[in-house]
Length: 456
Image: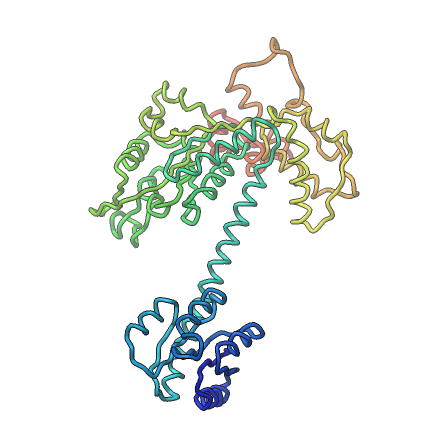
């Protein structure tokens, strides 16, 4: 710690300097304001011990100048006069402590130790705050970078997301096919909002077991049911003052929809087994690849809940409607996987863009990303070509409107079988290509009676 003693009494400054140096401080002395400012210009000072009465300039005026020019430096005021108004004035202008002359060496040592503890805590807080700010900034930048596109329709999506983000408790419904980046848009909204420092809680509405739905969303008290071995906060509590992202909202059971609506309307939740109501204020961002209005007509989704959730509705277009973004996405994913795999970023033949543009990408951006990852895994040369991105003719083939089979179930079953064959019947990989969860794939396998019979 570096200390500057500014006092017009030479004996006082020399004696205090000697004592501080014995205590392993680096101490400098000055007997006039001019000498003191000259030292401040040359040295980095952590602490100034400043007399109130100095020739030519008052200690209070020096204190004001010092705190303005060197805001991180702390000042201990010393005075031989017990003027309480001066003490109050000094503390208001940023002095960290005050000692009245004469004082013992022990008194100044204790004052300095107090200052050291404060500085240590302050620097630690500042470091943590800076680190947090850097993390938040980096996260925001990475999220926005991952949402790539120069097409007009994708810029409109991003602008709408940024506009919605500025209203921290406005609910947003994001629609679009699987693999278009709905969660990414949700994160852009949260991390661009005034509440970005608070929690972003992502929940797959179809993945929570029905028996645990209420407990997961609203929490429970210890002993409220078998297996409740302790108190548990629900998603609403954890996301309080932040964002709760409900993916696949259309798959939420009908009975939970009513409880979700009530929580949104009353802005209060109660844990299972508890009587206390907990106030919650948060943004709900929902996402679905279904046409929710059709589900409302089929009595599978509550209209009143839909009205609560879609204050702002954002639709993300499929990749086949913005093929001009393919080169940007390709470059981004090549760079990403080159870094992860510790490989050189490959160049690619210009015909590769035409090759990819001829494909309809049923799995959208997620499918393109998987294709790039696979190409990078098997990359041997320095250049990638169309041969490194095989496309299934059965999906790639363009047909006339008259020949199109419009039966949804038949097409869905056919795509599932194609995905399974392409992934050698690995259900995890197949579900990724299809843009659905593995649980959703298993349900569809049962629905269409598709049996996994891997050839030996």
